[in-house]
Image 1 (cartoon, rainbow, N blue to C red):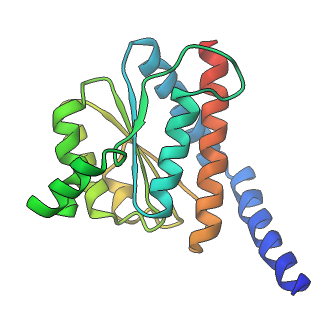
Image 2 (tube, rainbow, N blue to C red; image 1 turned 120 degrees about the horizontal axis):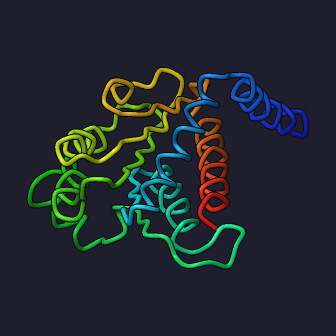
Length: 190
């Protein structure tokens, strides 16, 4: 059992070491920090979306901005788009689960906002639809995916694709990348 535990931890570390040595993704993380910093400075908001565990991660990262990360400071306008369960279940029932995020963006998204979509496969239809609406409105899109980037690779402005095809390792890295972004945005603003 302990050997298996060590293997899992080792695989997680290896994934992060690949990220550490990838200058392209490090540059894209920096780009994301600047994009989000500028959005907040302009009074725009950051909206997150994901499914399953990625929805939990989206909510977690939104809370880091709207609550606090390291500093006691004013709240930043950030939200996970799936938190209103009445909306979510009504739209999924009346229209389709594929439009839960795009429809909400039509209502609350504004030019200058940022949408961050988390999808380990990069193929989540509801996030792809949200990215399409975001482009029409003038919202910057950032995708956190697994290695291939999936369909989101061609649908987003910034692709942060973790070099793994293993869902738990991807999600662990998404949280790490999200925490890096939150820490550096907070430092830029406060």
